[in-house]
Image (cartoon, rainbow, N blue to C red; front, side, top):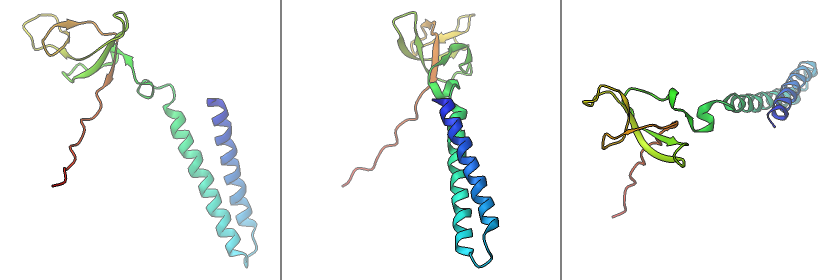
Length: 133
């Protein structure tokens, strides 16, 4: 599917090039047509740029969600973790170097050490909505 989309992007860019070329070949009295062709070229380019941007994210870990635990932040940030060797158990953990233990490790809120295999950022906290009075 990715290759099909790349082919479509190339076709859109070719259509944009053709529309710009036709706009330069318009007669001077045909300004409306020239304007329409330039607009059409802009739309083709805009669409191609959007699809290119989406394709750039395909295959990146953040586009897929779960990332290897080795790539997780180790600055004390709480993250959602998963341990695929433990029935995909999910926990919110942080890398802990502040406890009395000499070995930094992943810990939960009770400071128990854990061994996750994957992580992803926590979603943003919901914004409270005003309640009508």
